[in-house]
Amino acid sequence: MSDDLPPWAVRLRAERRNRLWSQREMARRLVEAADEDIRPHLPSRETMIRRIKAYEAGHNRPGDPYRVLYARAFGLTEAELFGAPIDVPSHGSDVIDLVAWVEQTNAGDGTISMLAEEAQRLGETHAHVPPSRVLSDVVSLERNTRVLLSGGRQRLRQTRELFRIEADLLAHACILLGDLHRNGPALSHGTAAAMCAEEAGASPAAALSAQAKTERWRGRFAVSADLARRGYECSPSTQLRVLLASQEANAAGLLGDRGRAREALQRAEEAAQGQSSQDSGVSPWSCPRPRQALYALSVALQAGNPKQALQAADMAESAWASGDPRVSATWAQIRFGAANAYAMLDDLHGAAEQIAPVMSMPPEFRVSTVTNYLVELDARLDDRRFQGSDIAATLREQIRDFTSAAAAAIGCGEGA
Image (spheres, one colour):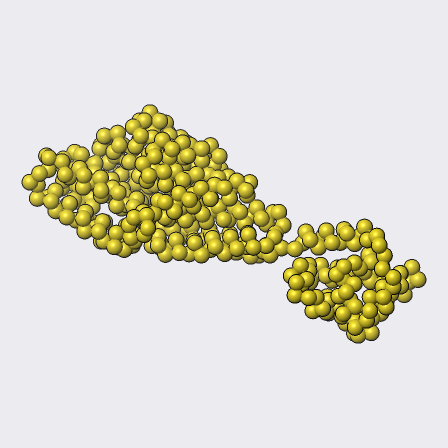
């Protein structure tokens, strides 16, 4: 034993060894000796062990509350263990306290990775699971993330990652709420998603995409187009960038700005060609060729160009035939959009052929983005030139059955 060690360091090591305690066991005993109000503030077990090693090496003299904890653990007085107290704390002890504070976290890296992986998995199920069920899972995961984020402290990098995950989950919830006709809650979730992305220092592109969709459903087309453009400008070179340009085109078309709509569609095509990575094609932020074609179809309908709309529908069918993933909602919208184009050409037999395969779609998948095309078709069929048409009457009855079943399955209105 070195004569250079201070007496209190020698005594701490001797008392521990006399009891045959390892340094890990010593750490456990110190934690057990702490009062209930002190115990939650103690560092991790590994940090406690490092602190014990430093004490026994004489590098730092224990301060509060460790003097008391050692005395309780050994059943001795503080004076017996440490001698007379000193008034000036050791600078080294302060540094150890700082290190211990930095290392405290209520979320390990493994937990955060699991949250991120689960958030991504929910995005991949978006196209194949009823939106009400996906929303339930997204909300549950978002609440778990929020508890970790607000219920304790993490290292700075962990906090940023939790904010990023929170932003993604809130944006996904925004999309799902809009699909379920709940634009009020969707709006607040989209706003919160953008704020969390900002706190994370991450791109707000996904949040802006979700907000743009919500504003489109609210009829605020200029706001929707501007949000999509902002997202496009800050988006990485992925399918999300393609989606944002397509969303801008759609909103601009609804606004009547055909020039802006054409220009945005062109940017979407350029973004699709210049992508640095591919994705599954089925997440809320994917925009593979069939979904691109859907936006082009929508813009063509808004411009009163049914032939161009049908060309876009053919592009989608070709993409599916060549292996692009078939998302049921996109497929239904393409079919219903094409039916609108045929109605504009006064070809109701063609319209009937388009919608027939979709009529058996499970009601829980009949989201607002799908049924809105039928609402438009029903309005077209109400035109005077179709009065007395048996085909028009049959189509309108099919539309009412389809949309009423959707309303019963997923609920309608802000309070649903």
